[in-house]
Amino acid sequence: MTPEELRLINHERFVAEILRIREAKEKPGGEKPWWQILLESPGGAALITVLIGGLAVTLITGIFQSRQRESDQERAQTQATLERLRAEDERMQKLRLESMTEALELAYQGIAASEDVISLSTEALSNAPKGQRDGIRRKYIDADGEWRKQHAIKGFTLAYYHHSIPGFSEAWQTTDSSVTAYMDCAAQWVIAHPFYENGLTTGCREERRVFDVRLGQLQQTLASAPPQNTK
Image (cartoon, rainbow, N blue to C red; front, side, top):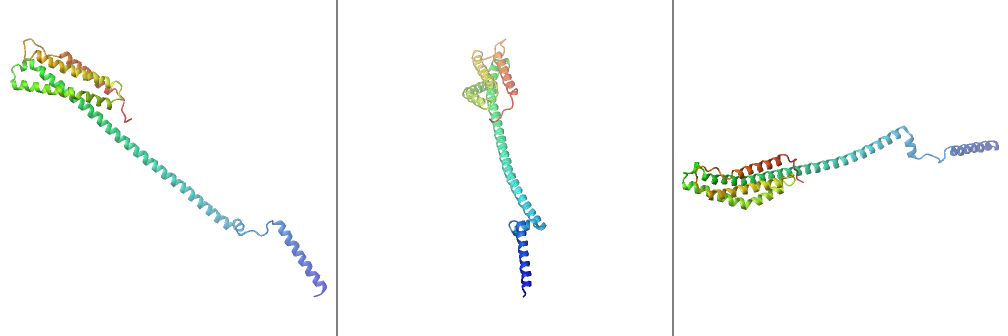
């Protein structure tokens, strides 16, 4: 190889090295890593978009499903609570009705027995057989004993189940007192008038009227009361 040829080869090497250095300066960092090349390529960008989109959908779906499960649980708990409250309200309504029914049955049992025993002094029963008259007396005695034994308990039960009704306790107490007053009057009347006497009127009419008034006031108190709840 001639000196001229050697000089040309070295010159080409020098120029190539200069070009390499210049290219390196224009592209800091040297050659791009594979992932950068992938990102900058159309196919790589599409792949990354699909992957990121899939991850986002999965994340959003997971969050939605989690919230949906929480919502379903809350809905189920709310429904269970409503059903429990509804059942409790129905139970309380039944107990209120039972307490009122039992108290009124006891009261009317005493009122009816008192009316019957007072009727012993009326003209209609003046010739009634002794057995019939004794049966009426026994019925009154039993009713009177039952009333005096049970009316305070029935009144307490009524007050417990109807405590939220304004004025109910007072209305029942006056009704209760009117039943006792009528029964007491009947006992005194039959002692004073065991048989019919000419011109004798029906006894204890005022006490009977007071009972009717008190009972009407009790019914009005119940009718005007707002709907009760289980609280």
